[in-house]
Amino acid sequence: MPLRAQLDDQTVQAWQYDPPTWAHLKQTYRQHTLRTSCCDQPAIPKTSTLGTPFFAHARRGPCTTAPETQEHLLLKAQVALAAHDAGWTVTTEYPGHTPTGEPWVADVYAERQTPTGTQRIAIEIQWSPQSLQETQHRQERYARSGIHALWLMRRLPTDTDDLPSDSQLPLFLLDGTGPDFLVQPMEAPLSTFIQGALGGQLLYWPRQPGPARLGLSTFTMPCWRCHRTISLIGQIHLQHPRYPHVTFWVPWATQSSVGDSDEGSAAFQALLVDRLDDQHRATLGLGTLKIRSSRTLQDAYLSQGCPHCDALQGDHFVNQHLLEALREDTLQAAPLWWPVSLTSDLMHSASAWFFLSRTSGP
Ligand SMILES: [Zn+2]
Ligand SMILES: [Zn+2]
Image 1 (cartoon, helix red, strand yellow):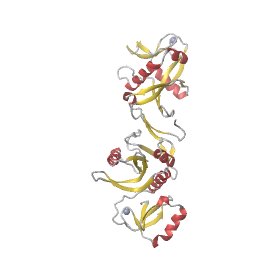
Image 2 (cartoon, rainbow, N blue to C red):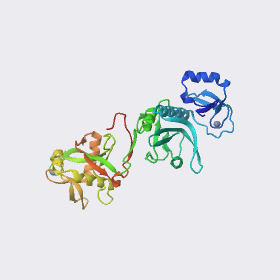
Image 3 (cartoon, helix red, strand yellow):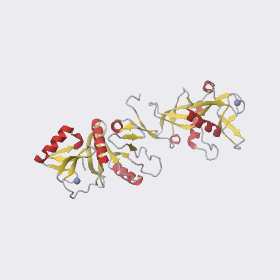
Image 4 (cartoon, rainbow, N blue to C red):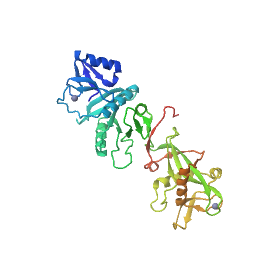
């Protein structure tokens, strides 16, 4: 069910018609030559039961285009219109091939001229399930053709709950049954998301080593030894240097802080030790960060301590109370940020997609 056809010598796209002009085309197309773009066969303008204008094949001919669902058709039309509204030149069911001649057809293809060249994007809608392997294969085929592809899928392509999405495979989930779809995990209406993605509001961070801001959150509790109220670091934050809500955190430490220690957390701890001076600690009510011996673990490790009696506040204990503070929403973000340089060991498994609002930014 294509959205694109040839009307006499003109290419027409069904999503570009408003209701009156679509009704007019339905009344007058017989006086013209209307043929499908996929297989150059006679076409009929129709409206799907979900209200999407499309061009039907007059009869099932030699066309090899796979049949598509009403939802797929509707989504394709919504994506095309949003991309068009974002100022891109849009073609649905766009055929192309890799430099070695492997063919592909993009659901929605969009391009625009920039001072540095032509930007070319394919947006693929997957209403029916598609494996991760097949998705990666198709992504790679687009990459070889010089095209960035973005996936909108109704179902995760894996058996796990993890979204296998990164800068090499931008993949997002479709939520809803239409006509109003949401894109997850952004919680963004489909057209808002498409316009934002094509307008530079979709950001994968951190993507490469570079500047960031380091911060922390604390919670309070009684010291197990002297029973005075003390502050402990619960989370270490990293923030984009320009966009404050582009941020992620790691716990002060993983529970197994000896032996198989999480290199991610250790690297963040090291950053913090370098920057948290006596004055900062006094302001925040924190003890010193230093190597202490743990009788429980029979080992010594970089730990937090009581600011009054210097008793070791074990990582296991800190993390348990972090979970409690998260549940009870009692974490305090420290009003301190330090510029840091993100190295590749700090980026380890922490990167994620962010959708910037139009008002965020420098
Ligand atoms: Zn066809
Ligand atoms: Zn104490």
